[in-house]
Length: 525
Image: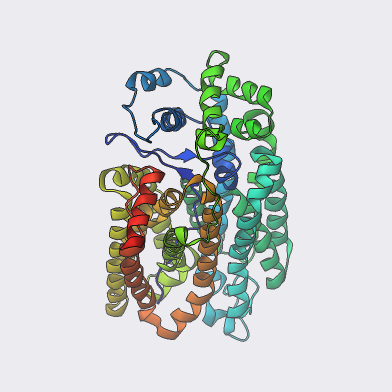
């Protein structure tokens, strides 16, 4: 019997400044050379909607609305209303849609192997292997299969450490073009090989591609659903090869459409002193008449402050590992680990086996239901976070997942398949509105600009590492304790709740300075 675990890290390296109580959550791209470099998909369409204009206005407000004592002045509703008059052109939406092809590949790879007929332990251990069973590489061992599934995670972990550098060097658009090579090579290798270890190499290459393309939660969750649909047609000895090769189509579409339908990030162009090119891109996105307005907002977020210009006493540059940031760093690592060690990714990697062991006649149906449900919570996470606060949502999410994991264990023990599906679905929903999206929002809020990029990178690496731990360990835990396989996650969730009470502050509606002051008070206590 098996229990769940989470989607890969959806990296929202944005920063949220103070917003009016009635506003939606605003995600901001921070200094172009740092934070947004790790999120090439999102940044490819920096000025991608009215919400982004709103974000730019908030950023401008955070610079302009503070007096010498750091006091925030009244919000200028007139200027905000004027910003709303700027309308995007079609190229903005085409840039967004084309860029989303790549995170779709990440979701696809997440659930691509989640069909119990591909690797049923008993069927694969049988000698001879019966025809129509153990469809992928008949006779493979559990170790070989575990390695093949999780090689994708290892590839994503590698890329999480490197893609920021290449994104800053090449630009977001060029990085996505180069990433298509990894998508194609990984898919071709997986499709063509006849050996499970060679297949694992293909998965690792695809993981590198997924690490560079991660950035849109909606696109990833939709990508998770489609393999579940295809399982109804791909449950043959050759069907898995078509699933493995499908990302080639995604890469080909990107290469075909991106040259004319996707623009480079204006923010990145400005960091490279390519101002005229940035103006041309902004003109295509919002019209020539709005270039100066949007450009002034973008440039205001990248200009040095009075402190940086030497008009006031400069701050000493500090290391992320200095005592001042120890609590924040501990909070980031805690959040990153809790997102994955909550158990959510076992659902997307192994739910086919989970439901089969629960006595469900056709696990494909229930896997499809869970994957479909997983799409929708992300649409409501922002609204709920504004209403209840980020910290409260995280704590409630941990409690909710704790309760659902206990109920799933009960459902497995009493052998009621319908309840297993219901509680698993609720488990996924709770994760989707709490730990799934909000971990990265809070992570970005805990640090000032000077160390945020490094802190976020550490959080991403810890997230991928815990993802790998769950992917490798869960099949063995499930076989060892069977119906009680959720209990390790129950224990971990209880620990995460206790630690989060101490290490995770409320960041909703607070500036970075206010968050740092709260941590300073905690250190004194």
